[in-house]
Image: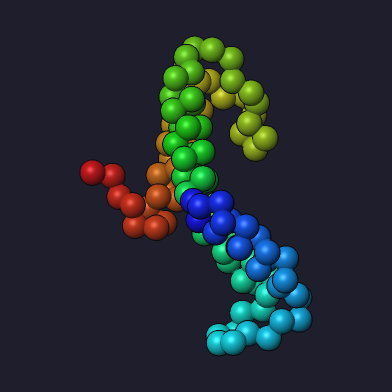
Length: 100
């Protein structure tokens, strides 16, 4: 995927894909395959983005102003920190990523 020729080839093949193309194996539709492959590319970028967001949040002064939470209303920086930790921890545990 790093070579220009490979990128052109893949783009050309994508352009030839039609919504009614028959699968040569498996049960995916062309639309489902596009979503599946897109998710594979996005996953790495999304992980990097989450890491960046967590770092920027952690760098914020807990005594500074925080926005009002849509469900919980006004929260202090300390409360936001607890909320974000618990929410993120909940989803990490959902996928078996336990704390050390």
